[in-house]
Length: 494
Image 1: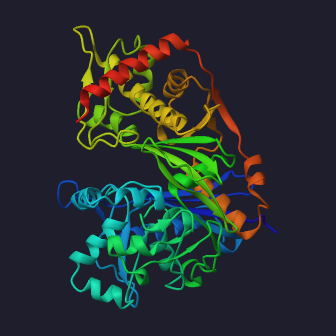
Image 2: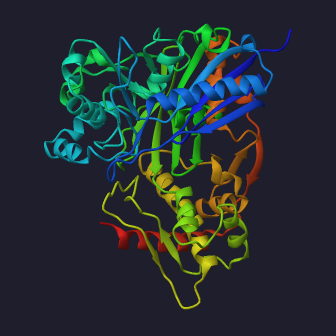
Image 3: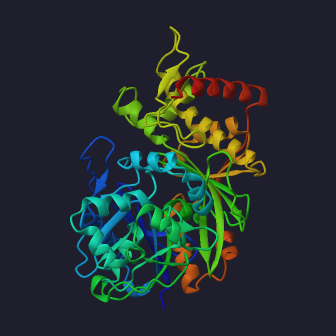
């Protein structure tokens, strides 16, 4: 008999990947397809939920077809998804009532400010571990109910469903038989109590969200039903669901408290496993559910960097200094460092630990002999410095110093960047053998759910380091460069 396989659906912000893994965590086959983005007003970001579903369906069918894989070989399906993005649809017909409002959308900023001014943020932070920000789902849900004709009345009557992208895909994959989410995605809504692991009645009232609208919250390795047999020829059990950053934490096998991973894509996310402890940050980091396995929740401390790879995209598309992101490696390798030049990529404000929406980007320290090499180097270093900001905030919140940092995402492929990260943080940086860590994490969680893996320890034993980047810079030079970064940030703060 052919050995069983695991299928991961990685529903990102701009594309969806379907990847099939064997039980050793190796990629057997993969497919990817982009979908559209809509920007109806400044600061508004929307997506067509039906297009997201059609894209997911297409890539799963393609990976099975092109990989020559029968659906009956799939032991379990796992889903990882862009978090916070919100979909509202009719329960009877499955028809979306509005485009999905994406996590990047800022239309509810004024509402968040009103709630903050009214003194509600301490309650929200204590219950959810989050801050009052349009990034999260609750104010998006309320906006949809207030702006779609008849939606509030229909929601109160139980005629509507609302959920993040995992919930929407589960509904479509099971033909409406499963209306659920997992604890990691629920923990990003501003409506979920981290301690009780339940939707919170007081927060539902504060944000004006009817409980009947929301899905059941299940374990990350829970039973989410099966894909409808008509979709792929055979029903496949769905046994793993995780938000994308939590999936990357699992894919990097960061199961022990204190372990940290950083994912470098358009933005970047640094996540530290805090185990059974909910760390209440005093430095404006986020407490969140890392995963919930067999009814037991593990927690994480998270910091987000708004601009990471997007800084290189800006150098390419805005300044025309490079023709592709990969070119930055060679340019930085040939340069003599940044030579006092700092790029602060606060194009949409600064994320954690500053949370300053009024900060704006700047290039500082330019002299007559500054050139492309210094600016490109400064752009790469800016991501390293922002990572150090987050690790320092985690230490101020009581975390021990990082022993190593496990990295993934597109920028992790750049060895100059990975070495600079080790040097400017002062800790070794490990790059894994399997770089598709988000998809791998969802597949591993599904494997735990279906029983092909007996424990997280078995998953962790399969993790392998492709390359370790050791610290080569002395501490005096590292700290001097960081002091220059701190000064640059002070200059751009709103």
